[in-house]
Image (cartoon, rainbow, N blue to C red; front, side, top):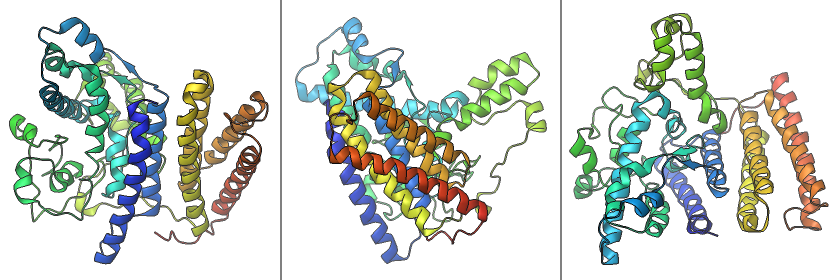
Length: 420
């Protein structure tokens, strides 16, 4: 296993433990920062992103290794200095990619999932994209390539740099004195996630806050302006797969409906949220115009439905870790089918939280794919047999029956209030 996959076996349990600690601390303080369906959605999003990365389903327009091979003019020594320079370059690249994702229509689709929660807590940090399959961040790493900084440094530094961004997604930590001038803090990042006019499109830095101060995008958190979280066009779903592609689908529809050829072309590269005038008039979208009057998305879910979603989430995590352990031993096609089944499962149980009829369709696809994979492996499951296979068969059947039950429960209209 590569460093990224290996690190996940330590990072994910650590993140889950910290999320639980935050939830307990928030409850003791009487601060409402969690909602069961929202946390499930966040963790599910993290699962889909991790699965996508685990099977390496992404493409680089230009890779850093290519830049090193063709652009090195001086081999930087010693190693510790190369690591320091690599960290600064990684953070610089992260700032500009982050800023592009916020400011350009087509790139916003790569990042909208991270801002889709209307809460703000540690689980939000795990809302990561599966729609950013085409990567081009290497263009911002040319300074490191010129100095011949090895690719292997970034292979280790990249995941660590990402994991270091977890801790500041919280409302429970106030301003941190001197650190506010050096690092991105929870206060800075609360501003970044807020949709208040005073805060929108600010604080893109990832570890070192001085990039925002250098490039004019810094905004401190104001004592008299409480951050309101989410997106200006609310996601209105718990399903992270849908959120990942919802903005792109809207761009396609707008490009199709607009009458001007120029608008069909430029809509993709205009500032985020821009829509042709004729489309805005004919097809208005729900948009938050006054954050102080925000009505958060909520569905009335029974205790049993929420409990089922937590169980489904945990089973998916267990199967994901199993998939990581067997990837080197099986063909790419089988690995992709395993990954697809897990993502379909996420689609299914989060759609059930949304009270969507297509949850049962997704569950049927999962059931069919699961039994097909068992059949083609002679009734073994990626190296597992016996008790484990019987357990999986039982799980597939019970999962389908419960989804069917919840669909009928929703149609009858008798679910109890969401316990969260």
